[in-house]
Amino acid sequence: MTEENVQADGDGQPEQVQEVARAKRAPLDLVDVRTGMFGAAGTGDTSGFGGLVRTIAMPGPSERPYGSYFDEIVDLLAEVLGEQGIAFDDAIEKVVVFRDELSLFVAREHLPAVARALRDDQDLRFELCLGVSGVHYPHDTGRELHCIYPLNSVTHNRTVRLEVAAPDADPHIPSLVEIYPANDWHEREAYDFFGVIFDGHPALTRIEMPDDWVGHPQRKDYPLGGIEVEFKGATIPAPDNRRSYS
Image 1 (cartoon, helix red, strand yellow):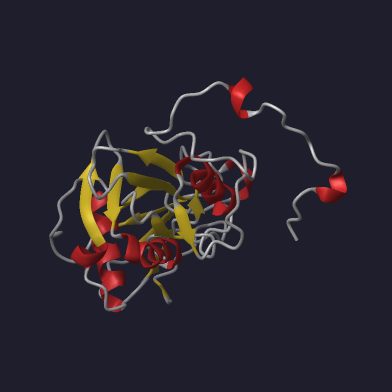
Image 2 (cartoon, helix red, strand yellow):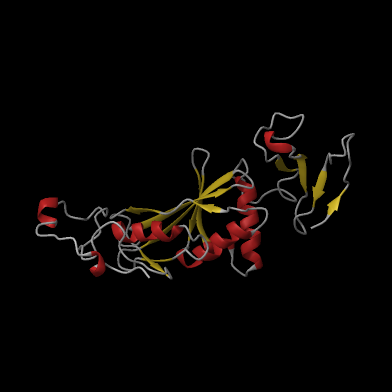
């Protein structure tokens, strides 16, 4: 990464820094320089972070005009996946923009590669995954189980949703714990309540229901029953007999 055209004002503060992020990509203009804890001097920015603004969304028109900054995210993701030898149309089954929210429907075998690209590329930088939510659609034949991962970029103040599906007959989805470690408990919860098996999870055990619970209570086909029946005769084991997590 290089810096060009650094100019100083009367206080010796840089007015503008142009950074070339990657070859074949438009430059980034650092338009608000952070000064102290109250944001950028002389601007309305009070966030304390300043702002990076891309002068041109992409070199040339986007092939995927989704509007807002969505086309930039999709184009960058397609470029990064292409560098790994993964065709965008193979990894992403569908792109949906609804109510100013971008959702990428990901083929489950490519989920880790897509998540890693969104996290690691400097122009994407989705550093946070806010967990995983399970959904059960019994009538969506071959895609009954869905998992949704909301991602957030602190660097660029952007959000995107990843959605991946698996059939009831083969409820396996790659775990993202290695990429987003905080997903550990969230994936266990989705397994507990929906029966999604996250391949590669370090300790995929129930987190809410007892270990010997039969079924997954938040699935649409789970029979309604009374708690007094389910827990009849239940006891709490002594601490030295409880399950070890080590």
